[in-house]
Each structure stands twice: as structure tokens, then as C-alpha cells.
Length: 308
Image 1 (cartoon, rainbow, N blue to C red):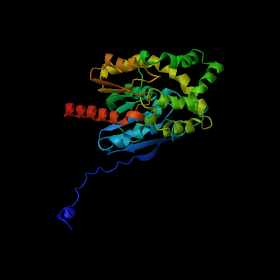
Image 2: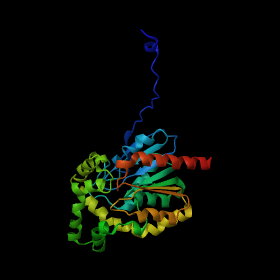
Image 3: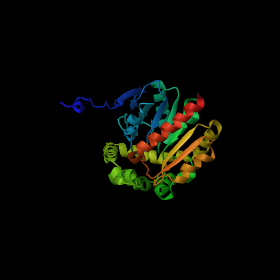
Image 4: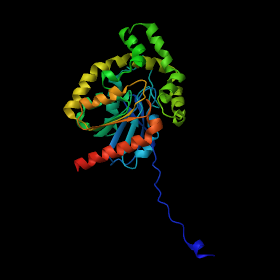
């Protein structure tokens, strides 16, 4: 045996895999499913999902960041693995979803957190932030809107028609096409610089859950109730100006639902803001979770240094 064969191979540095736990908390009569990763004593990020998805949209981001952060991602009622009471028995409104998530944070003992919002997560999260500004350490905004110019005109035209004529069954039924697999898949792939990077596991799971009996009516109720959000933009903008939460905007610039004008508008009201427009679509995490994770690490790291 030669000396070379006697030399031990260098030991590779291994990073222990980070596990994501899948849990449930009781909020009133509701079971709220959530994903949790990271140490409880690490800085917490509360991740609020969009439509038509659930906390599964964070399935790649959470293990990537969990070595440094404590991450909590709940499913709203009617979404993912949380309770889905019939729409006749539960008010599916953004006010009520925010109220449930507010109670959820208190139930699991979240006193302070950075808030990651995307799509529906923005009107839910900004309701929380406006009600409890002392709890929010920072905002991370990924294709979540708070400005009129952020609503892409073509995409929102049929929804606005329903808002203006809420008793019209014809206008309600016209929106059912937004609940089909083709449109769910479109939301994932439209604007992606390389659609082959988008796993179809995401839209397939979302569509399976959308097609549960009664879920279409829940989604149509929320389409109508979305009209309550634009009138609150001024309130949320006042929250931004008054409390100046440090803010990171990471935005898929090719999003057919929310425009880059909406992304840039945050800088009008926030002083400590960092904006990155990514070559991605509405669900930017599908193609750029690693880039977004790096932006979050850098942004949150600077906050810790500034507060030290």
C-alpha cells in the first residue's frame, strides 16, 4: 500500500439538514395548520401566503433560511390543511381572515415578528401590522400590493366588474374560470424567465384543494370581498409613514396581476427600504427562492447590525 493510499480523505464540511415541522393550532372552532422551522430563539418571520395557494408556497424557502431564522407559515381557513367551514357558516372576508391569523399568532406566542407578505398575504398582513405596529420588526413584500397603481388593469377588470355589481350572478359566475387548473398553472408560470424551473407540484396541489366541494364558493366570496382592500390602502400607507418599518421588496417584475409600479410605490412612504425587481413572475419563489433567501439574510443582517 502506498503512502498516498494511507492519506485520509479530507473531511467535508456538512450542514445538518433543517427539518420543517407540520403542526396545527386551535383557534376557536378552527384547526389552523402551520409549518414551523428553525430555533424559537432566532428572529421570527411570519410568512403569509397568497391565492390560490397555501403555506406550501414556502416549502423551498423555509429550510433554506431555518439555520438563521424562526419561520412560521400558517394556512388561512379555507386553504391548505386548515379547517374549511362552509361559506354559509363562516365569513370569508379579509377582515375575518386577518382576525383568525391575529388570534393564531397570540395562541402560539408570537410577540414580535418580521412579516413576509405575498398576494392575499398583503391585505391580511397589513391589517395585522396596522393593528399591532409594535409587533412588526420588518416587512418583506413579495408581489403583495398596497397601492392603486399596483393593480394590473387587464387582470383586475372582471373582478372590478363584480365589485361594482355584487348581486350579479352572471358576473360572479364569470370569475369561475379563475379557479380552473389552466389559470392556476398560468399564475405559476406566467412571467417566469424559464418555465421549466417551475415545479408543477405547486399548482397541482393548489388545484386539488380548490376543487374540494364548496371551495369555489369560498373563493368567489373572497373575490368579492377583495373590494374592501383598495379603500384601506391609505390607512396602510399612513402606517408605513408613521411607523417606518424597515422594508425589503423582492418582486417578480413580470407578474400579470401586480405591476412593478406597485412595487416601486412603497418607496414613497418608507425611508428604510430596499427594492429588488426580479426576472420572475407572480410566484417568484418557484424560480428564485435562493435569491430571495440571500436578500432576506442580507437585509435582516443589516437590521441586526444597526440595532446592535
